[in-house]
Length: 122
Image 1 (cartoon, helix red, strand yellow):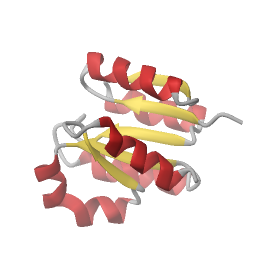
Image 2: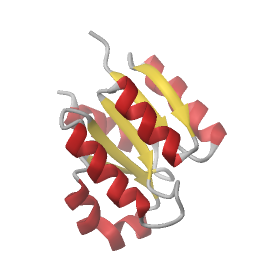
Image 3: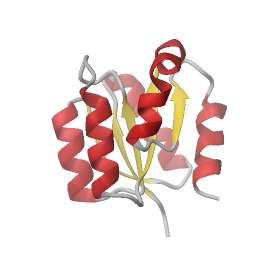
């Protein structure tokens, strides 16, 4: 059975490219959004196998509490935080406490995302 994915990404072009790439890998894209509140509601509604969440959607620390809340309500859902490497290093402990399962720097090559997916869905 195909795995479902929800993409919460602020850059529409990047979001569409990611949705297309994940579809080619066999994922069913259940939604894309650039709004934090919509991402949270869609995750609870669609219960995806994977949430790819841009940690900069809100512009503040709300992403941490959102991800923790979502992981508590949907413990089986895998979460890959998406962002910038230097920013993630600064907040790694907080993200790990929030329950994320992986991180992908959106400026790395796509092989990094494939590696994360292989680790999460072997």
